Length: 376
Ligand SMILES: NC(=O)C1=CN([C@@H]2O[C@H](COP(=O)(O)OP(=O)(O)OC[C@H]3O[C@@H](n4cnc5c(N)ncnc54)[C@H](OP(=O)(O)O)[C@@H]3O)[C@@H](O)[C@H]2O)C=CC1
Ligand SMILES: N[C@@H](CCC(=O)N[C@@H](CSC=O)C(=O)NCC(=O)O)C(=O)O
Ligand SMILES: [Zn+2]
Ligand SMILES: [Zn+2]
Image (cartoon, rainbow, N blue to C red; front, side, top):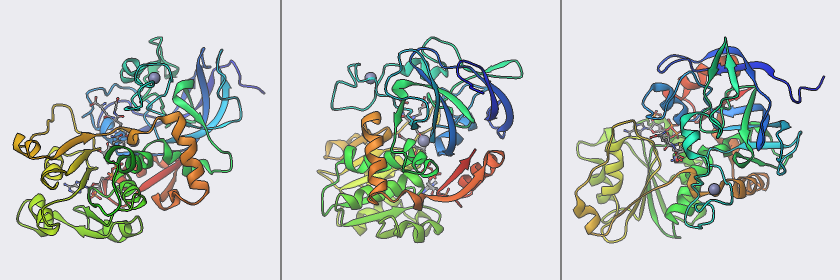
């Protein structure tokens, strides 16, 4: 029996309040309105940003909410006016939309489409309403995606069709962590052949930075992490050396400057800690070193360094979604995966069912997983 135009009842992992485990609930998902698409999610990754918002540290965090933004799925139905996808298409939801008309989309210097940024940050659709209900309560959307649900509703500008030959339980990771790190090296830093790079935090994002640095021809890629178990894994992604700050009694930036004849050409912060953001900047070479902030820090936290660090030629940058214009780029990254240029499978260390989603968070917090993929 067709579900088109009807409310769908399905399972979702609901975050009722900050700091509490997710709860598997039956929810109601409304049909898509004009410009919207209802998607059956078949797999989703769990990114550190989901844990960050669940922790209560996100100034934009609102509850109850359906979290998740690293999903893959199949279009169930489309709202009026939708032309770029149709029922049955394989798709990846995109937390950075690409409307192709706003001044950000029309500027080649940025990927940060602002068409719906305000309402997306408020956890609602552009008309101010929501498409999810549970136990008589409306649930907020998250990052325009809400992939921790068997069905979700997203905007057409926040979705792209991908090659059906690609398994959705792998290319779902192209919804966030992999493009973020890979693009940070290739698009934001624009790493050159022969460069020396350091990556702070060897989770999925940091390891994707390593892939990007190596693809760009970097000579040395130094991984900085407090979990020594990460090094063996990191070698596979192109990390050439490992430094554990716990092994030294001086600031890690001093250690790195000493190891690299004055500092790194490029550093990347993939943790979300303002102290390591400072270390990453100060580990850069005088005169030309560039440090890219990728990690997301909690409400109220601020970065600092001596302005002299910048006066003497170091550059501090940041990136979201690796600088990729999302709808143009993710289908291309899927094709890079299919041609074996981009090794997504290596990121998937664990597979769990929706009912086990809290275990995926535990695996991430305990440093055991790179990515745990939830199967619906
Ligand atoms: N800007 C953007 O577009 C995006 C930003 N993010 C952000 O990027 C960050 C990384 O995400 P993700 O890879 O999913 O996270 P993970 O939790 O998978 O990885 C973080 C890594 O950093 C390590 N770490 C923690 N503290 C330190 C420290 N003090 N020094 C060195 N290493 C440390 C962790 O070690 P351990 O194994 O012990 O936990 C872990 O290996 C998060 O802040 C996330 O919110 C994510 C996606 C997109
Ligand atoms: N809500 C937070 C900001 C969180 C943040 O910086 N998100 C990143 C993506 S993290 C993905 O895992 C991002 O894209 N930022 C750009 C944006 O427009 O949000 C806060 O309010 O601090
Ligand atoms: Zn993410
Ligand atoms: Zn736009």
